[in-house]
Amino acid sequence: MRVIITGTVLVLALLQGGCAFEPVQPWEKDLLAKRAMQLDGYPIDQYLDDHIYYSKEGSSGGQAVGGGGCGCN
Image 1 (tube, rainbow, N blue to C red):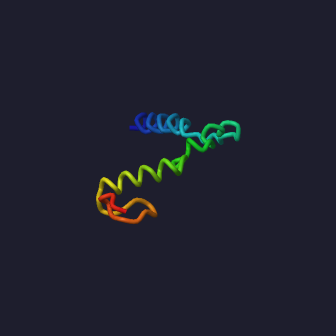
Image 2: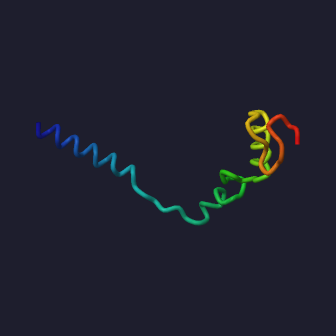
Image 3: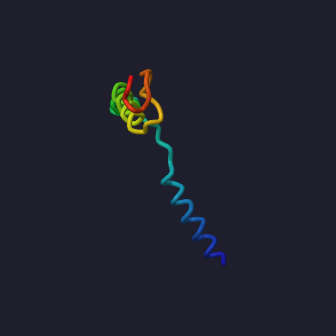
């Protein structure tokens, strides 16, 4: 029983070492800081996607556009 507990503790200690936190340096963040890498990188694309979605859905118009989902403005 003691061998099983010791083995379990050793395995957990080894696995714990893989979870070490290593801070990211500023020069390693350069690609993630680009506008295209953000969730809403290009606002005009998001606007057009929303407009197409709401037009096809038929429930409401696009963002800040009058009329219904049928396309009649």
